Image 1 (cartoon, rainbow, N blue to C red):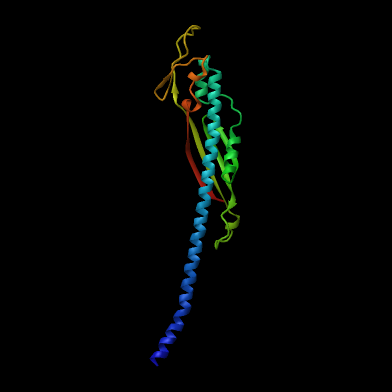
Image 2 (tube, rainbow, N blue to C red):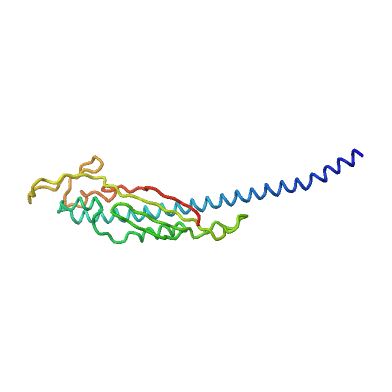
Length: 203
């Protein structure tokens, strides 16, 4: 009788075992879905960061070119360093960098020295035990800023024979010679570009 009772206990425990294993498997697949979503969000943020940096760097290069154009008119320098000059749309590079990171540029804007973008991943989170994930795409936003590295002092009174103002960038003085392009600072000497903030989520 005892042997029969043990077999009966085992028979009752088997369905419980199956239920527990099934539950654990479901949890494992659910965690996998969460991991897939996290990876997708990470990809979206990477694409957004790359896109906004590309746009800001394009803007920086245009500002540097504007400064070089106005080199002999120091009264215009401050507007350049504050971003108050017309720019050709710098967002083309942002679109290219988003595409290279398997995402689509949804929006790109700039105001003076601050740039922002929104992107969406081309791939969805993918099939999982969580319903609807196959249609969910991750989106992300990012911002970058351009910061002038240089300072200068304009002379009190204009003087045609006076040299150009002393330009100092990150503590380094530049002896500017309009006749020698090698004496002019590069765009990265004039401006710093870096990320400001960003946020990724699933839609």
